[in-house]
Length: 128
Image (cartoon, rainbow, N blue to C red):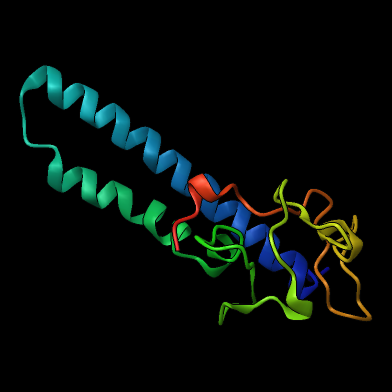
């Protein structure tokens, strides 16, 4: 059975995050052993960090990690429709909460992705 497009995209994102985390663990291990052996780990660490950088630069990450109060949408990172804003608890403003549209599963009629715990990252970890 073929994955529906949205499920396949979610699966691929989880796979990329797992790969990035494994690379981060490997880079950490390499740095620890390099410190003990007094070698030059910078080039190897850069190679190991590349998959992590790819995940961190992915629009699906950047959309929820803005440095302002407006989430983004789509791979083009357009401002979220309906003038959605962060709100004091990162879950949207009083009358436009994230979970008003982002439910437990994808909405095939509207195209709104399912995200039961949808929220913006705190401003302290916004990176673009």
